[in-house]
Image (tube, rainbow, N blue to C red; front, side, top):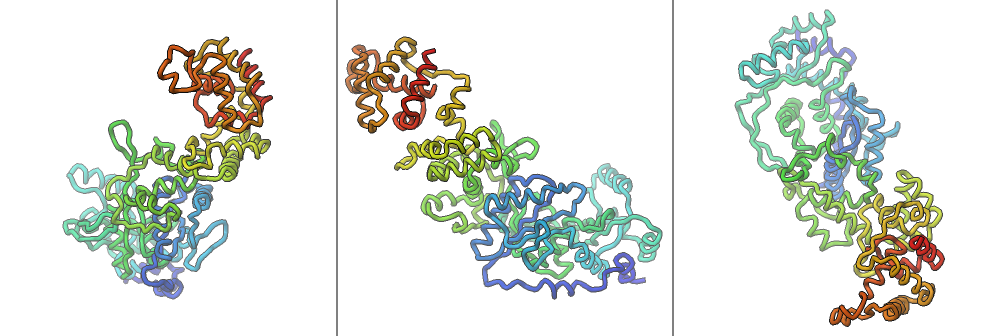
Length: 551
């Protein structure tokens, strides 16, 4: 009996060897320095912030070098697979306009290095696993869950490392005859990689973020093919795929560092060139006086749908992540305001090697800046797109009052220092509700008057202004001069300097009177430019609101 006899028994359908795939997956036509990166999520749920963080790095690396970015769906864990997840992944990449150059979706394959879905590559994996068996670097393992659990308990009791290695790798000791006999008898098995490493030995490895690492050799005979569906584990599949798809740089979370010795040993067993590795830090957040990992279970911001639902501009989310991808990004962006994020040259060395702090407050500030620089019509379009999905009532109002809404969003926008009221698109309705009669009339109103609170005095100010001083066609200077005239008539200081010198001579000042008018028509003491608000509302609507106040 030979290893080939065992390999043929397990994989009788595989007739070619691994060199067959070298003919199919030829080297890519790359110029010097061009990088090939991949986003390789598992379709087991919503795409999370950490995954998108890595995808963004993949995208920037590829674009920086005029290289290529592809999507590979790693769906070997089919028990946890969610059917809609692949669509969610593609929708997210499309939404943020970081589309891969090669991908497989909805029956369509773009690129020559597919299939890009791992469950469709079973024959490829079987060929490589068969090769490992033939050269004596893999074997069938018949240990049951109960057997493995018993070993684990024994290891813990005796203070050994847990795992399938050394004296604990029972099936490694079986003869070829025993292995073949068990397979022919119908016993269930997995395929394990046969490690040649020694855990006591250390080796050096250069990670592009972490720098020079010293890691223990792998000595575990880890599973490379499952028993239930014949699909490989991540360990085997990613090694084979990154080799065949000619990935130059593997970007993944630092939680995979402990598995790196396994993967490097696999690459060497196959005689494959090892790609560069970028192990990204965990995304963390502040919680009171401590810092912890962002959790899919605890934190709504951990999933990318959160940012869509909130209506953050896509560029705001990207910019916020870029600031933690490289520490010098903000400085570069300030110096190059007209350039896009892909113009920035990403350097793994300038990435935090420990936790990457993701700050929602910083995202809010970035988002405010981006929205403040948008044209009013663009704000309208983006808001309408958001409202179509998340706010039917507001969507209808935006449809009904399109030009009016654009004028509203243009208040204090086209100036040297535009207003930065809007954090995201879900925030806008809460900021401007009083400008839509349908929202104003149904809202339970609380009037936030400041210094002037006497109801009769408020009525007098409003009624006198509307009767004697309001005119729809006044320009801003004329409008403000009339407010001053109103102050002089009713005993308020129209000149702030005079008021400060002799406050006891006046009931109040021009700011107090303006606040009364502002609150009377909006209920709020803080709003954008009052003149622009009154100009948009018009006489009839202002009078109606004053009547509501007086009632």
